[in-house]
Length: 84
Image 1 (cartoon, rainbow, N blue to C red):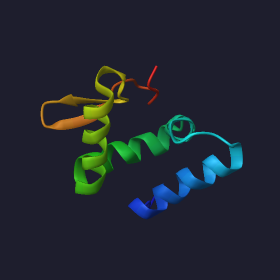
Image 2 (spheres, one colour):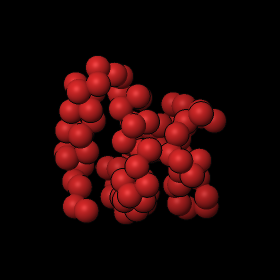
Image 3 (cartoon, rainbow, N blue to C red):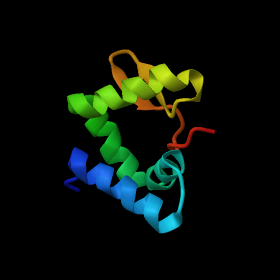
């Protein structure tokens, strides 16, 4: 899978438009897919822009963030990629 940052933004936009949902709900749908979640987990720890977005989510959402820190790595808090 070759998903660039801009591609992910477009995927979120298209998902929102198709289902008439919020950004958070679009993320829930997208991150429900195991393959996408594995790919994003790698990107978060290798791509500075992805990492910055995950850190921002951690800062803004705290314990409600879908991400957590494990040492120097950022991981999905739950194995299904959902917030709650």
